Amino acid sequence: MHEQLFSDPWLWCSLVVQFFLVVLGAVVALKDNWAKKHLAVALGLFAILGLLGMGTAAEQAVKSALDSSNLNNAVTNLGTSTKEIGRMTDLNTKLQEKLVWQSQVIENLAQKNMASSARIEKSTQSIVATVRATHKEVQAVLVLASNKRTQSSFSEAWINATSKVAATLRDFGSEWASAVHNLELAKWETTHYSMQGPKFTEEQRQAESRGFDDRIDNVNKKYAALLATTIHDAEGLRTALLPQIPRGDQTLEDAKQAGFLTQFETQLPSSCESPRCCDGLPELADYLDTLARRAKAASS
Image (cartoon, rainbow, N blue to C red; front, side, top):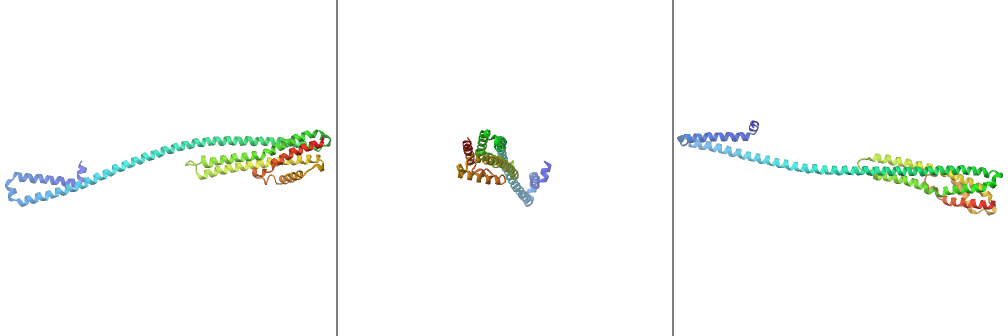
């Protein structure tokens, strides 16, 4: 209280004026003749104290209005701040809900990617096993074909081997394209969907994209190497089967496929970097099946 009194000069002035007014009023009331004898002094003192009181009251009113305005502004700012805090809290809640949802989406996509990778790996292992087994069988058949004494027992063996090579060639392009497509789809879902939002940076997305590119490149190289083995087997069988057919019964298709195989074999696997190089394989597969039947018919 005392600190407020001395810190506010107008309040102090008001108290002093009121005190002197009381003293002057007491003097006038107690001394009847004094006021009449000193009328000018009394009126002057009352006028001076009255003016000081009015000035003090006016300044206190202005200060009070200013304080009231500042208080209203403070209350208004507080209300605005409270609303802003509420808005930010609501945004934060929505952001947390979005992050939780994104985490669930990322988890689901990760499971899908794992399942897709497992399918691709299983499919690749299956075709690797098929090509290796077929290659082993073809090599055994070619050994029999080179032995004149075993040609009679060779007939059915080369039919079976040729059928397996033709089946591998017929589906090779679609299986290769399917493996690459699944990886490209997983790459798109990961980099354009699950890795969007504040949890991932552009550098992280690019690193993940490069990882998928490396996996696609490895798949392409693996399938190119498998195709080179299968084409080599197809050429070996063609070379063994064609002489069984009389030269007069050989056709332009025989010459065409011979040229196709020779060119293909010399270019693999370095020039074959995607499933697009598998164009013509279904026709080659059909030709090998037909060639085996023609050779069997000619040798019987």
